[in-house]
Image (cartoon, rainbow, N blue to C red; front, side, top):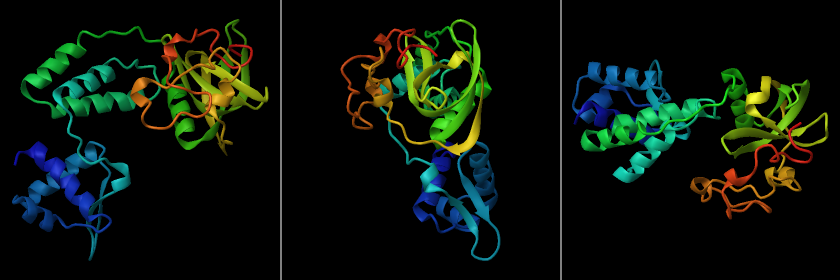
Amino acid sequence: MNRTARLYALVEELRASAPRPVTVAALAARFEVSTRTVQRDLQALMESGVPVRTTPGRGGGWTVDPAMTLPPIHFTADEAWALATALAAADTSAPYAGAARTAYQKITASMTGPTSAAAQELAARIVALPSRTDSAVRAAVEQALTDNMALRLSYVDAAGRESDRVVEPAGLLTAEGRWYLIAWCRARRAGRGFRLDRIAAAASTGEQAHPHDLAELLLGSAAAGAVRPTALASLTPPPPGLTHAQPAATVPPRAAMPHTGVP
């Protein structure tokens, strides 16, 4: 068994035993390698971000949080190419671009031979003109959406006016190359859209946000017909008013905001 296959197998062995810890000696015997090799492999997994951890003392050993990892997924060559090129094309200013980059690296690292060369050659043909979004702003928006937390924003509108407000995120809208945070604005007491590249600063308030339905916030706006991207359509059923009938990118960016347009 080569090292790459052994690293995958180590994670699966720990997943199968979770939450019971497994000793290095037991793992070494299982994979017929030295304990030193297992220690190096576990350290490499930790450094690559796999949530493996060790518990010292009697009854201790190595464990992995199964909720934080996925089992191996076997892609066809075409599926791997599609994912690699889509992730390679992700705008660096887009939400979750950092996670997209590391996912791309993992997928390409798992490919070998002609498959790897073909995917990298295809990815090299894709270019993008990124919009300007501060990385700290993007990270704050991502975290607020993930944790459902209220955000304090400094926002610059189309006329160059800056305002401060607290918003409760509901979701993200993409339209013609632009990304928007759709949220309930406490100051306006209504749904509003905020272009990510116009957010000058963003920070969590530490408050839990009230739940808001994305389709309801878009209702009555030019973005009322927004749809989930085809690739995401099967993950969750569409809420009332949000369908899969047309591409989201058909929504004009300046008119895509709830109510009166870009705040």
